[in-house]
Image (cartoon, one colour):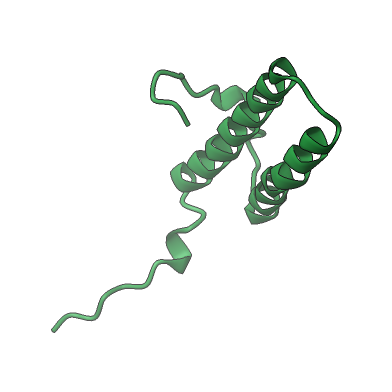
Length: 85
């Protein structure tokens, strides 16, 4: 995510969970298939730039979901406490 962008938390549903996060990660991983398809179809530079903007936004939404989950403490139960020595 670019530092100059302000997060739009309103774009993320308030009730997000690990399933939402997983689905968004899988969607972003499909980027490789999309790039191959574009390359094989002889896409123009403008088309690649448009695709880059789409994926930039998808990664922003993914990060917003992750940030929402952190702020809601959804990962707190999975953090191990270091035993005192």
